[in-house]
Amino acid sequence: QVQLVESGGGVVQPGRSLRLSCTASGFTFSSHAMHWVRQAPGKGLEWVTVISYDGRNKNYADSVKGRSTISRDNSKNTLYLEMNSLRAEDTAVYYCARDGNYGKGAFDLWGQGTMVTVSS
Amino acid sequence: DIVMTQSPDSLAVSLGERATINCKSSQSILYNSNHKNYLAWYQQKPGQPPKLLIYWASTRESGVPDRFSGSGSGTDFTLTISSLQAEDVAVYYCQQYFSTPTYTFGQGTKLEIK
Image 1 (cartoon, each protein chain N blue to C red):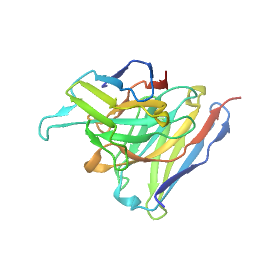
Image 2 (tube, each protein chain N blue to C red; image 1 turned 135 degrees about the vertical axis):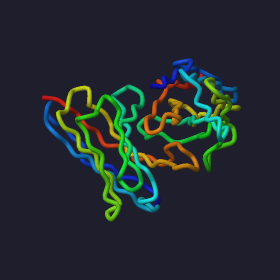
Image 3 (tube, rainbow over the protein chains, first blue to last red; image 1 turned 30 degrees about the vertical axis):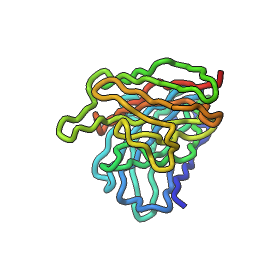
Image 4 (cartoon, one colour; image 1 turned 45 degrees about the vertical axis):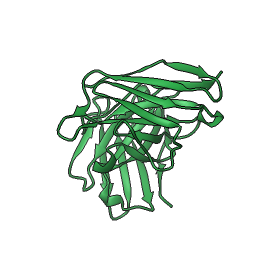
């Protein structure tokens, strides 16, 4: 079954760190760039970060740059997002999404999301 | 950064009628070398993740009903649902991927039944 499953969300205090995971199955994970996209409660979608298929290239939204690190382990079919110095405004559902690559360019597969709540 | 602006913010349409959602980019997202518009449309139903509907502005994703269509070029784009069904109630987002590896979404349009 082609799917993405996120984990690692929860309630965390401001200033603390959290690592999210996204496990892929049913497709060749190592052939696709991967993204994290977040959605604050009742708000729209915000692209967060992308990593190339081989992990060599990464990019971040300004809102998380310097506080977050995206990585992947192709041997484990797993994508990660390490978030540091968390703020209340980082509270959101975090989705991992597959890049359709050059054939589509868009995000053609999404996980169900994991909720991160930053609160004291 | 490329800003994506959708209109309207919300829309109520009767069952069986046409629904039209607009999306405008702050700069052209047409790549001249391949004549492709780097625009996608997503549907998000309550409590669910987004689902890709349309890419390259007008190419329907596999399995998407043909009542959904995308059009436009350059800076102005439209998602049309030709005959609204009850299951189409959702929030719809446009997204540009012209400025890869940076991406932006529109603010979303909430579609309801009148």
